[in-house]
Length: 305
Ligand code: PPE
Image: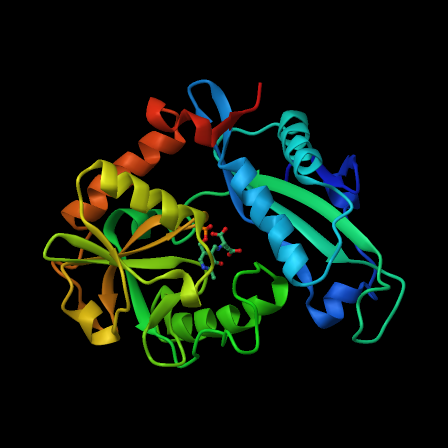
């Protein structure tokens, strides 16, 4: 990990190495913490955070879902992101990880008496699934783990505990020699990756599952907007794994993964086994947008003076 100088914690900037927590922090034991993954891009006009207000809104919504009262509101958290990025020195694109977690003070499953801490860290982070992956595609395996059931976990919340399932799915995929896992929902339809949403292209139409069994993804929504701009038909409906095998193209989207082509699922080549033309077009538009090169979407960028 590429360290930066400061981390924002509970209203103050503190040196990176001092941003530690107690062993008996409630979240460490019971997994209740709301977090976000946000990116800032090194544009021609300096660093710009992509869809800052949407990420902060989802962070606060996640906290609300898991009954954590954030001591900071939307505006205060947005300001904190900017303050942190201004204080640190970066030489490239940045990944931002705000987290609202439960600190030290009480033990036992009930969490409402635990103190609430808020921190924001940001560091330089390149292609999540590798430079080679984002260029030429990755190998993916359908997971033996179903995506967390909507009957028992709350998938609209980006909360730490939900990621145990993702972690096990990812581990299995890596052990199988693949780069990412594709999780199906309880009925066997495609849900999402361990940390990404999923798209296929069939007969030139872009198809992605609804939000029923995935995070309400900000990148997925952006890609849908961009595709519509380009005149590409977009359909949100259920997808089966065998439909992916015979798709022309497939790709993952996420803040970390950006747009990563899928070249293989379950050892079947997808299309020509490389980034397809629709994927490449969307990648180009997406990077133009986040780099501040598409004036139509300038409202999605928050420039750090
Ligand atoms: N589904 C899941 C389960 C998920 O974690 C993410 C983001 C998405 C979909 C895509 O959402 P969005 O970023 O709003 O487009 N995953 C984050 C976690 C990465 C990590 O390893 O941590 C991310 O991309 O930041």
